[in-house]
Image 1 (cartoon, rainbow, N blue to C red):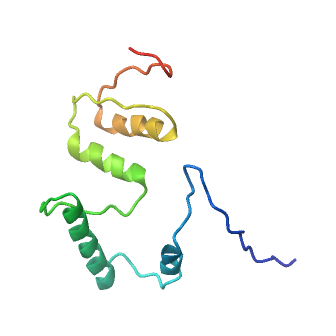
Image 2 (image 1 turned 90 degrees about the horizontal axis):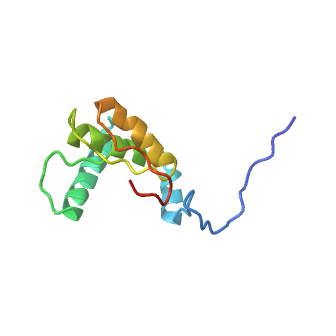
Amino acid sequence: MTIAPFHPPKRTLMGPGPSDVHPRITEALARPTIGHLDPEFIRMMDELKSLIQYAFKTSNQLTLPISAPGSAGMEACFANLVEEGDKVIVCINGVFGGRMKKTSYAWAVPRLPSTPTGGVQ
């Protein structure tokens, strides 16, 4: 049995995801992989940190890029901003809102009851 190579056609993706990837990114993906403890990786993350600090106009040394999906970034927000007993509102309008509701349980944070789409509570 032979397996044919897969060459996806070029298309313009117009949905919420996946989205088109700039040629510069696909070129970067073709470069060699390095580990997260490699000095070059650490240098690049330090540079990225300074760019994030510039973009958000902060000099906070705890500014850091999170090399993970967006959900991990939201979880980091919960972990750093919410204390036990705090009240938060989690808007659930899809998969990610549901994921944030589940994530908030880790801090035993009360949530407002959900309301059907278009409803007010």
